[in-house]
Length: 104
Image (cartoon, rainbow, N blue to C red; front, side, top):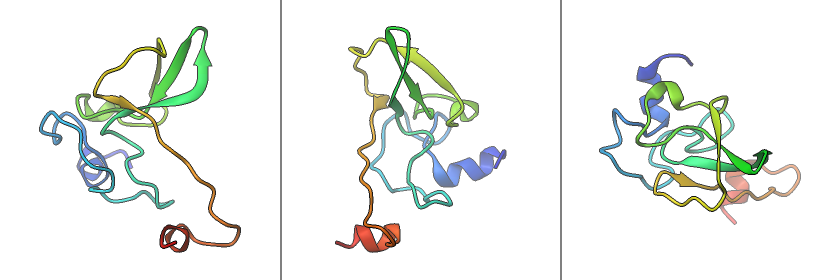
């Protein structure tokens, strides 16, 4: 949605993070069962913008308006800081729900 009050249920950002990162899964998942798609830490993506690599999603020290997948920026891939990270992804066996695959 477009309401910052709803975002608090799903994401850590400047107004509710306490100026720190949080463990994955402390907020509600989105409609696809994915946690922390917005806020907490910016996520490095496998796409590029020239010599820079793209990051998306917002972080604990940015405003609510920046906590969205459409907000992206590029940075030197050697850059390291506490508000950037990456997501490990795994395909679940065909026909299984994410919950069933997670239980294995």
